[in-house]
Image 1 (cartoon, rainbow, N blue to C red):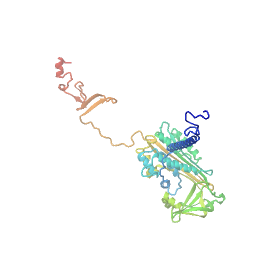
Image 2: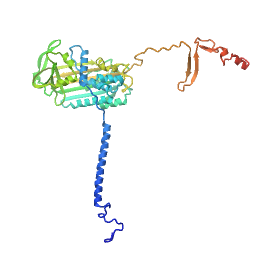
Image 3: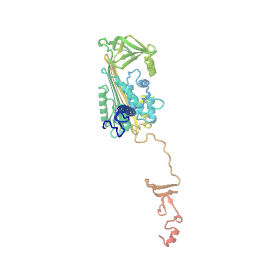
Image 4: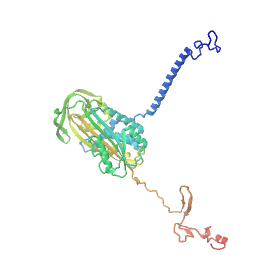
Length: 474
């Protein structure tokens, strides 16, 4: 533009034109507006991303699990099944985790009974995803308790006979929530060998020959679910080996001399009218052993009867701390438990009943035919080593009906109709009635069981009308 002349457009210079895009004020406003829009867009994208992630990552709330109550009831049932005054060791976790996995594939009364036995949920059984969330959370918490001095190894596995088609939702849930390994194996001797070798490896050879003949020999066996637990934990304060010496243990069958661990240390004891409970923590973690010693006026049976979640909570609320002269016998033993007679009275009867079991969320027509747990424990100056392995065998119902209802009578002892038809189209090929089922020798005057007089048979060649029309006998 020539100096001194006006702009023919009337726009003027950028600085003079309030709406010119090059005006500094406009530029500043545009930059501020653009920045605000950018921030708003980023916030919106972040919100959408969070919502999308939350929707994808959202999982159902874990179902309530009264695990201590379950453990206490399971122990009492197992102890009652044993010879009185015998050692007993079991893993409530191993039983609960294995059957919780199967419970996610149960339906109807089977699911309800299993949840009741496991002390899981409320009046109604939890949804499969809720059960899975409960045990996934519990497994995660247990894993966090492990460290360099507390080895805790958990495993779950499903062993399938080739050809068994698992529900995809069950397979996915087993893998993701229970970290279960799915494998195929022939049953019988080969299956026993493969599973037993697997269990021995997972338990560092503490559990051998978990499954013995004739288990898995049934040709209807389709699936074996296996849970293993292995613990090797060092005491926070080990006992000195040179302080170990024999001492009298007052066993039910008479006094015996056995090696005792000895130490005097600052310790914590939980007191209740029925017993005193010594806390023995393991190193660098949240694991501990609680030794419950009946008071002089109570028996071991009294303490066993009191075991429950609320009772243990009350016990923990009354700690005593101080110098304690500890004398604890070393022990090393194992137990084996047939779980069917233990779990059935606890409410799990339908799962073991071929007529009533409904595991349709796993595969059709399955029931639990066998279930066993083997466990052992060793306690010495250094700490504790323990292992447990639990299996549940699932078999097909027998090909024949398991429960025969009284046959419905169908006695054709009076005249009846019959028809013969093609079933795809419903086309009737023959239709008749039977009034006199006695066989006739003259097939031309009547089919077996149905005789019609000639005078009444409109198409019979001896009918008078036919003869009249044709003028001759046909």
